[in-house]
Image (cartoon, rainbow, N blue to C red):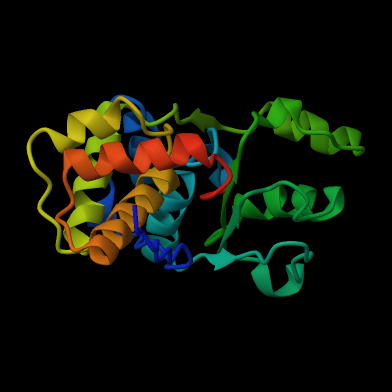
Length: 224
């Protein structure tokens, strides 16, 4: 077919408030983010599968509050975090039980706050501290479902717009029936279609998308 696919999957997504697409799958989570600073105990756990929009909502909250983002794999210096909001985006393996226990306690202090994103509910997290376990069972939690068609269509349109592509009316329904149900998958698909169109000198269309999925079916690890 003569295609030379130019894949650039390292571009950082733009997590702006105006880029967030609201739907039934995430409306409650968005409402809880907007409810800050009126969270019970100053804490909220934002739960959902990979690619559902947790990091986008977390970044919106961080921009609004100036929260300190806790770096992966490092415990917080609690002495400098007291009295300020803290974000843990992707809890898994980031902090010790002791640090998380103290962060939850500090969240209720004046000026404090704690937003945690994770894939499973707090009651299912494996911890060794009994006091932390009881705190996690009481932690305010909101869940995001997998992106529905409304979200995926919205993010596809936005990603196409960022690449200066105006999709034909028949393209989006075609993609929605085949795309993996996640925002990163939508972003990568647009990048890949743009690369194919550029390499082959053709517009992004349903025909090009069909060709892409045919190639993907033949070489399923090509875009892994």
